[in-house]
Image 1 (tube, rainbow, N blue to C red):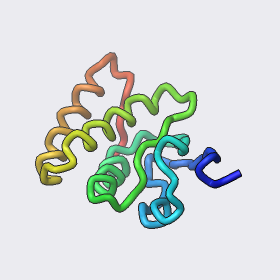
Image 2 (cartoon, one colour; image 1 turned 180 degrees about the horizontal axis):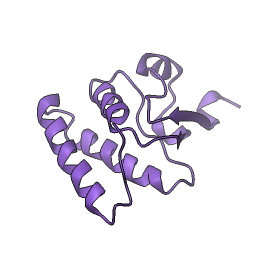
Image 3 (cartoon, rainbow, N blue to C red; image 1 turned 90 degrees about the horizontal axis):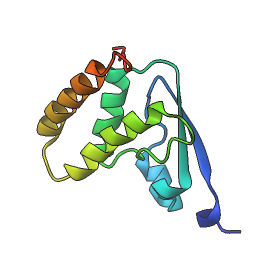
Image 4 (cartoon, helix red, strand yellow; image 1 turned 135 degrees about the vertical axis):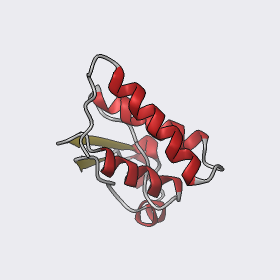
Length: 114
């Protein structure tokens, strides 16, 4: 069995970035082979750092969230970054801030910590 046929699992505590892109790209593992499980606080500061690293291609992306419902929201934030990959980070960050506010407004379901 080759590594491309394997599934990898990574754990993100408090939404800290899970692995540097250099490691992941050297092993040629795509986001499709990566499950990221998020535990702990929904830290906007940590997620924002992770998204910035992802935008700069310095960290792996979202993978799939396994069975976690809350990871769907995180995956959408990564989707925004993917769509805006050619846009300067300062603009992407403003869009993400609007996303954060919209998600927080929905029934208070997503309460971010700093």
